[in-house]
Amino acid sequence: MTVSPEKKKRSSSARVSRKSSGIKRFSRRILLSVNIILAAGLILAYLSIYINPSATAIPSLFGLAYPYIVAANIVMALIWVIFRKWYALISISLIAIGFGYLHNFIRFTNHGAEEHHDLKMMSYNIRLFNFYEESQRDSYRKMLQLMRKEEPGIICLQEYFVKGSPWAGEKKLKEGLGGRVHTHFKLIKSGSSSHYGIATITRYPIVRRGDIVHPGSSSLTIFTDIVVDADTFRIYNNHLQSFRLRRVEGNLLTEITGEVQEGSMSNVREIYRSLINGFASRSLQADRVKEHISTSPYPVIVTGDFNDTPVSYTYRKMRKGLKDAFVEAGYGAGFTYRGKYPPNRIDYILYNEDIECNDFDIIKARYSDHYPIIAYFRRADRKEASSGQHSPRK
Image 1: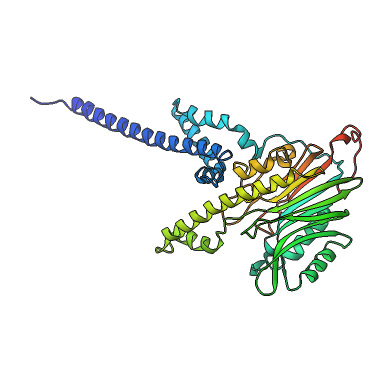
Image 2: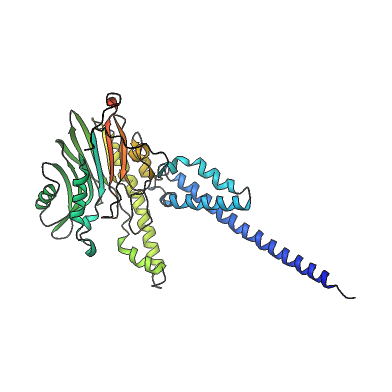
């Protein structure tokens, strides 16, 4: 019995169709598995703000990666929409539940620039003025030029660095900013002839200087009581615990790209330990700073490099009872870090309800691995009185 060519063709087509259908089902199962993993990662990121990393830091790792996990979930949702599968609801639902988290990274409403303000404030991690970067030795002059151009009433610097005499460095900085400024420095000796720390610089009178000690850490927090016109504000300038990854990051990056084949797992383990220790240390520091803030007799502004994202225990602790200048008056993506690791938002200006933030800027100056951030404030009880009045930003 012979089989006609048409029957052979139909049989062959059926086998091809079944094979193709099987591949599609297998591919969708793989995609669904990936989607479930990404969804679980998003849930862990949400939990990170509630779980103290000193107890367990696993959720904090997912909180650190939140912007990229949510981006991956958006991609998965789009893929399922294209396939016309209800699985898209997995990621869409989770993103919708945590939309407030996304709003802490990206602001979709442009409030516009309102000119009237009582106080302009800048926070800037200056990365040691790039002292050890051979290709950027001119950064000191450029950073000071930027500060003079912006003319903020208060400047909070992190990773300040001076080679030689701290007093000579302070004098040079004052002169570079045009003189007639008041300063509050907290420095730690670094090497035989250099100092590292933070600084608050202001055109307004300082009536008190103090600091919060973080035992066993080079992290620094200072508070400065500053009189702006007739009002006194307490400014907290923070540089909280970093991950201390610089000693291994170069080796790890080359290993990831295949240039070095040995020792990569050792470096991965070291990075993991650094991350865990960083999360735990920052949580303790945030608790300590927040306790001190609660004792302030004045309206507070809390600023600096927190070394943690808005989806973190540190941010939630520090922000409790305060407003976030970027969330209230910023626009677009809020990423402030632009270094060797993926971009993220780790620099903040927080404040309480005695004042109001009516504008916020991230200055895209590439002189450091952080962007400077600027907030414009006015007293909340002067909102109606200032209506219709405008003055140049100062």
